[in-house]
Length: 345
Image (tube, one colour):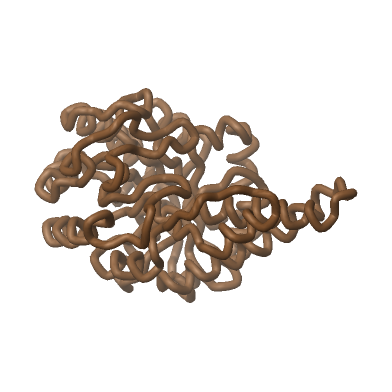
């Protein structure tokens, strides 16, 4: 079994100065693409599932699928991560299913839409950390609210995200508050708000400092040099995938994601976990559209999905290589949960 905690993988990444892609999965196809790319590139990987993905795929089946896949790829250290857990209870249920890492997102209230107070965030995150660490499970927290610095609004992805608008300063993580939050909660990793958002429509133009606040990452890393930072909404939304969808019957308005060179810059400033979802969705749906357009009489589901697996795998390979994770899987000695419990004690 190669399931590992997020803390083990990110500690290694910090020691060697690389970043680890965290890919959201929904089904067998996305999981296969991620793990095949990880195996080919000898990369550790974080596989994560949102609450809506758990509901869609069924908790027990999804958990069993990941565990079985981990056994099928024995050379790949795999962290199984709960993305955007909205309450301590959601995180506890993930741990019971075998997730080796959880995110307690207390930046929003339990409805996943309303900005929460700092005190609320500290309370729910600290409670989750205490529960998780006692079981050898690592925890990601979030301080600041994800949203667009262009519009002031959030992007509701799978029913999660800010509803309404906020002022610029409310959409950026305060570096000193981030330091206070880590001290108060004991989180293993910290997601920060710098102007990125979920979904495809992140920026209306190639982002510069006024709408992608990389200086905030630098300021947080200066105060928290030993804390693993997390970049959410980090898909690049490649132009070729937009074209693929649009040329085969879709309609994606011109949009921009986070350039890979900006992610590489963030890694140099302490970002260790980089969340990617939209790029895989676009690769799979674009490939399916292309196949169905070329084969209008086909009802071969596997024929429709195989090109998407190949295209998603290529996306994952590029991320592993660009983020510096490639070649590092075989260098990590995965510790059992019992050892992590002792580590946290």
